Image 1 (cartoon, rainbow, N blue to C red):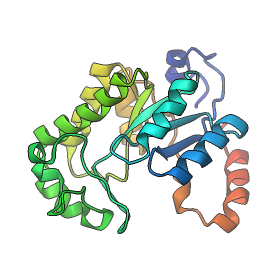
Image 2: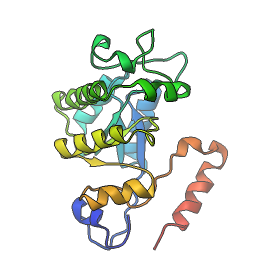
Image 3: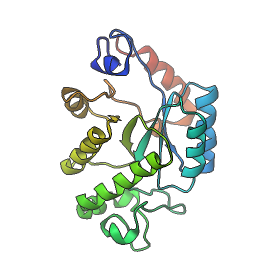
Length: 221
């Protein structure tokens, strides 16, 4: 976070504090991901996570979060299912959100995103996003923020506005990337990251630790 950041104030930290938040996406995707995130939250430097509600291991993850209420987590809004042999679909019944699913009833994969975005109906997206948030609340959990999974929505301003509206309605922060979105959120009083976050999925595992060290040295003063 930047010195004198408005986000610092909203988070209750000193205005000139430099905050580094190491965050782990995709909690609930599968057992291996859950175990890795549990361990890094407990024994590592990860300090927050985000939950994929439609995925098969969401219940396992939600029990962990219930047992550890001090851990901040977000709802990782999910309408993309990217693995060829491991799929998931909507929390809402498929009959209510037909524009969001393929012929097999699963969410579209990453390569099909242009097709998906061209046909996805905003009212059905809102229904599914709300169902995911409400499922978390119904489990007795209190998320801190919203973000989204693999969804490239640069060409769908209506989807962006929908997510902003949901964050405002549920009184949640937003985690976004891109200078435009960061400044737009902060101009509206949303707590969010001050700088673009790094999606470490794109990094070569061999050089990942060295890249992290380099980025820490280059953090803005």
